[in-house]
Length: 252
Image 1 (tube, rainbow, N blue to C red):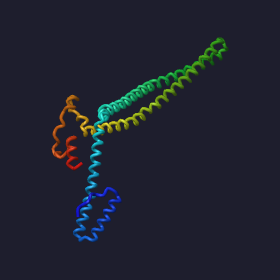
Image 2 (cartoon, rainbow, N blue to C red):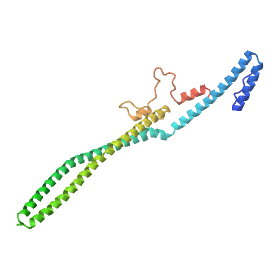
Image 3 (tube, helix red, strand yellow):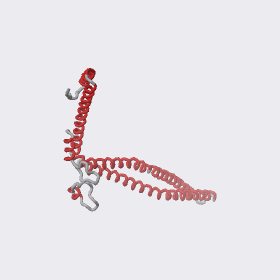
Image 4 (cartoon, helix red, strand yellow):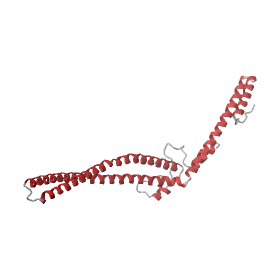
């Protein structure tokens, strides 16, 4: 009894299995075992062919993906440029935050000193105004002038206190720099990981030359041959031709 092609549908498999069971019931044990082995081999061959087709489709899809010039450009230029821009954002943010903090730290003590001096001056003017009033008003205009000066100093002190409060708020607001850094740095790490993965993928397909040694030019690296396989890796495929040959040898 010759082996039949593997059934392609569930109903066909069920029918083939029923025929096999009927044949095995009437056949001798040796013949029944042979029929069962033929059925199993047919099923394995069908599975192997489908696996080969899937392998070929996956291989062709990867090659089409790697042949897209945008992938190589993204791996070589787009991702590094994005990473550099993010690093630049962090550097500029840190620089601006440090400059603001330095200015606030320098301005707060000066504002505090000016506030204390204004308060002392206001109190001295108030005492002088009381003394002049107690002397019987020999200088009638002096108390009024001192009173007006005191009120002006009082308003200046209030404005200075407002400036101190604003500077304190600016200092507290610089916490955004830490938050920005905490958010952007993981993004940079993700970009770097995607960049490394893209470079490995494109190099696997031969789309990007290996990185040149220190001091070598980029043109030399782009034209350098791939070289022999490393010791212990003789069975490893080295390029597109080897992959096609391997798939063809398997009947795919």
